[in-house]
Image (tube, rainbow, N blue to C red; front, side):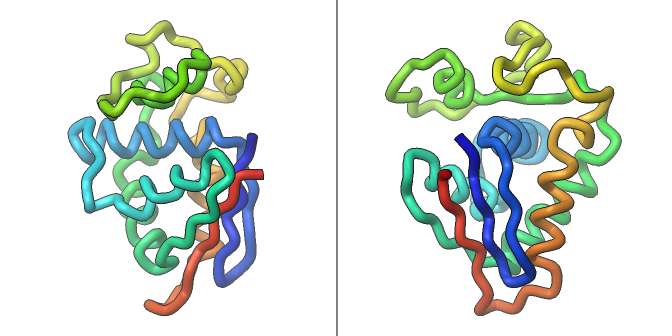
Length: 152
């Protein structure tokens, strides 16, 4: 399963687990563990999982990701977070729980199936390339520009 993000300046495709861990880490470190309106576009992309088409405001997504990049850049791999919903999907438990609490991966068991061995020693190594790609395709976006998200 992968997500395709198509924006005003191109597109990027990424495995869903990389997006989910980015979203969960944003939620854990910047939203106190619960989704908030402050990162509504980041959370909104999850609506594409399962085959739905989601359209997000490109400028809003860019602003949210820029704030996330500034706050998460350089954090160690020990800061990687995972939500109960992501854990449920990885464990093949359906439907996922309504609660969206997060915890550090190291407290869950220090291993994320489908991610493989941690690719480095920082959060940048796990999802920095996705953040960079999404920032690139939304750079200079206007209020009328959108990002289309699809589950491939």
